[in-house]
Image (cartoon, rainbow, N blue to C red; front, side, top):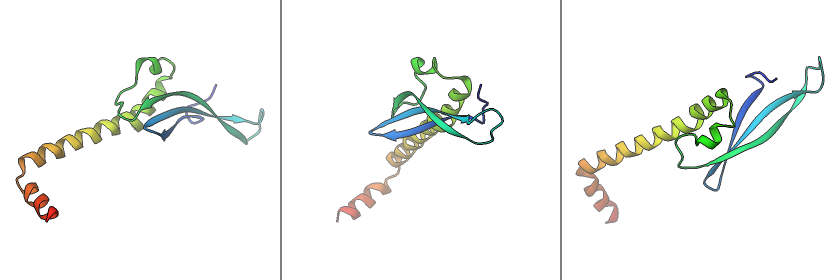
Length: 105
């Protein structure tokens, strides 16, 4: 069995989706210090998904779920919250109308 250091999730973004691959290091043989990496397709999520779908969670290990939460879903939630905060701040700030008018002139 692979250890946590030998197995990671690879994320590939393409066409509005994030494709998930399980990467695993395979030694060339017993006692051989070198080997190669293999990737196994696990699934995909949309670019706007902020939490792990249950169907996908069922095929992932707890470590892989934690990696996805840390590397994919938590940053997406933070980015959405920041965008919402900026939009709310802009709505209460009257300067943006003046700046927009100057830009248009």
